[in-house]
Amino acid sequence: MKFGGTSVEDSAAIGRLVDIVRGRLEKKPVIVVSALSGVTSELYKIADLASKGEFESAVKILSSISARHRTICIELIPEEDKFRNNCLEELTSLMDGLGEIVRVISILTELSDRSLARIVSYGELLSSCLIFNVLKKSGVSCAYIDAREFMITDQDYLKGEPVIDEIKRRVPGLLSGELLRHGTLITQGFISSSKDGIGTILGRGGSDYSASLIGMATGAEEIEIWTDVDGVHTADPRYVNNTKSITSLSFEEAAEMAYFGAKVLHPYTIQPAIEKNIPVRVLNSRRPDHAGTLILPDNKINGDGVKAITFKECMTVINIFSTRMLNAIGFLNRVFELFSKYKISVDLISTSEVNVSVTVECGIDLREIITELSAFSTVTVRNDMSQISVVGKNLKNLRGTCKNVFGSLGEYQIYMISQGASEINLSFVVSRSDLGPVLHTLHNDLFNK
Ligand code: ADP
Ligand code: ASP
Ligand code: MG
View 1 (tube, rainbow, N blue to C red):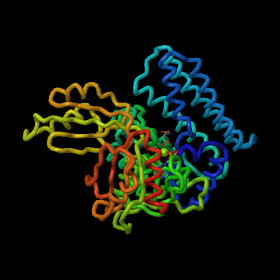
View 2 (view 1 turned 90 degrees about the vertical axis):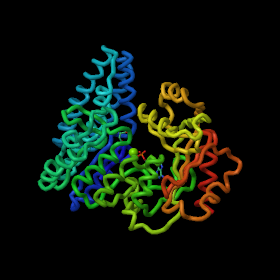
View 3 (view 1 turned 90 degrees about the horizontal axis):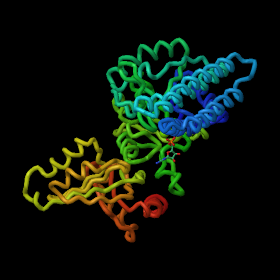
View 4 (view 1 turned 180 degrees about the horizontal axis):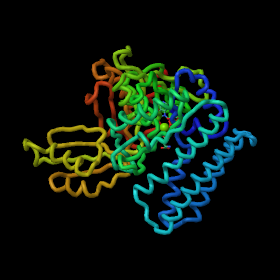
């Protein structure tokens, strides 16, 4: 069971978590927690301030993080209870450790990826310590295991690639015994460690991925992602009105949605579930009785057609054109070798013999790759673009998909279209300023008619 930031954000949310866990004790759940909502972003901010030597400003945020956790501890654990003192002492010791790192970085004004990973991992260390003590005080027999003991990644400190074999090797020994002894255990999402014990993280939103990796390695019956919406919706309810919760999705559909921007799941969440055919359920911790969305193996899901709209708001379109390459073998190869060389991940591609258009996420430094591409082609770059994807089983083979999708979008300029790479996704690019109206129109047209 993974609880995201909003599902642990305050005393009320953690109270709900305890009730949800109590209702599932007979299943011997592994509880995976995120940092309290907003804390990870604050920790990034603290690291940034420290790297500029702005220690006093960093300390202000540190103090408010500390106060927030202590207040919840005091609100949820009565004074006479031994777990209150345990909790406050452990929180103090964690905050002291973090304060020390921030102080040193402020003096050195130097922040490596490794130090940044260390700083931001405190969000989950604090939340798991707090929630562990609250669970114990509530009479839940629970073990605590530091995820860095089993969630092993390569040495990419900020976006560690899980070493699956190592995780599979470590998890049963560490987790199963504790589960048998205590009935349940709590650990952190997001944080991990390299084989030689240096702290890494899985990247933003990574707790979902942690949960599904643990689900895979323990052979769980189900992976539950508890969040702040009634499951996966037909579009992001924060951007689009009248979205509906989707009852069931196939692994492929859910993975495609996550990969193409549906923030409700980290892009890699579904991969580990596929390996062992483990159902994934997305649930609302504010409305635990709602059935949410059940994500199942592809052969268990019937029903073709559009299921959802996802988007990536900030994208760049790179157009690479070269008439000299007409009839020349190897143009595409040359182009994509460069993307690989600069480790730039390409989202959509559309090609003709002399032209390649690709989308990449914005914020990537493109100067060097453009210089190299320009040696054999004419490169144009469009910033401030948005990418929209329509996802659903067997879209490619259904008649009328394009008409249904583009029929209502006549007044908007479409810069690029890509279909067919996957049977279940039709993606296109509009200017960022059109994103809101296009999403609204498309959603209305596809789901509310
Ligand atoms: P958590 O802290 O629980 O991990 P996130 O904020 O990462 O929560 O993810 C939940 C949010 O994902 C929702 O509040 C919603 O705004 C957003 N979201 C984006 N696309 C979708 C979608 N298709 N269905 C549901 N939620 C979505
Ligand atoms: N706390 C981390 C983040 O905010 C991981 C997560 O919540 O999934 O990115
Ligand atoms: Mg999330």
